[in-house]
Length: 431
Image (cartoon, rainbow, N blue to C red):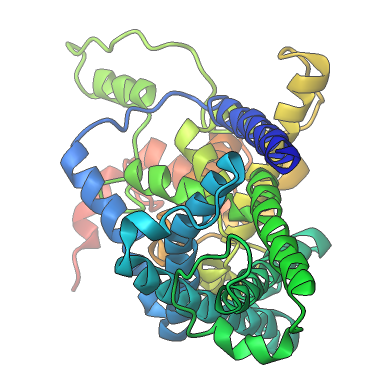
């Protein structure tokens, strides 16, 4: 009974903390400007099923995709085992699903063990790729101590959780064979049986190992759950809504500002009366000028570096890294959220995303080639954030490279990006 009460207290605290922290992220995402992405729900469900559930964009790198599938499938399916652990913890039962599922239970436990082994091996390979092989896409100016540590912490945690799961099963099975206490004959243990010779024969020691691993496994999962909102691994949850609400039009397609479009139409057609638009800032200076979808993108970023590894600007040594754009956006909106918690919603800290986090040099290095959005495995769109901040630089601060300013002047004066007058257009014909 004491164990059940302790379990319920830990479970309630874990759920309460996670709900509070997830609520803060939801509040932070809603700091963005409104954007309607409720159209064409059937197509959106298909996109989510293909990209988030089916991992379709991961296959461009087959080896990493295979390892990620093992971890992803293992994470999803082993949660059935976690459900059983939760029920056992609440009601004080032991392997509660074994009797209702009958022989199917043995098949499931055997499958979970194979998946747990694959997850464990995959995580070890991921750790080696990051820390021994040192793949280039896991480096960069934005990959400071915290992002690197975050990736390692979560991989080590998964290794420990899977090891505890298999050790728990090995001790449990050994107790089953000894017909000890309530350890009834249930399950199939193709992997953990290999660990049995390493365990002691004494039943008291086996019970301590089995119970110790049981508590370590479930508390580890609850700690993992509460670590997610502070980690890039929150993409485990946000990948699904983020792909659902992703752009259905061609990625990289620019959107025109309604107010400017109206002015241009009125200039070309004096009879056209533009709708009265709400006065707002041109482009984006801070995260509150971006849309909620931009901010959801930032919280969904996996920091995998696929975007940066295909960015031609980054490849040729420019300062731009699309991954840094997303990480800076996430860090800035989190900073604003923390300020709201400490000082109230009207607090101004004098900082902005543009200039304090992201420089104009980074923004103008972008070729708008769209490679980053194509490469992202969860349909994140760094290009939209870059273009919005460029708009602010041009339309609010008049800060554009000289070549662009010359082009803007030519368009205004000549109706074309070149310096030749409209009257001379026929002279442009090739000889």
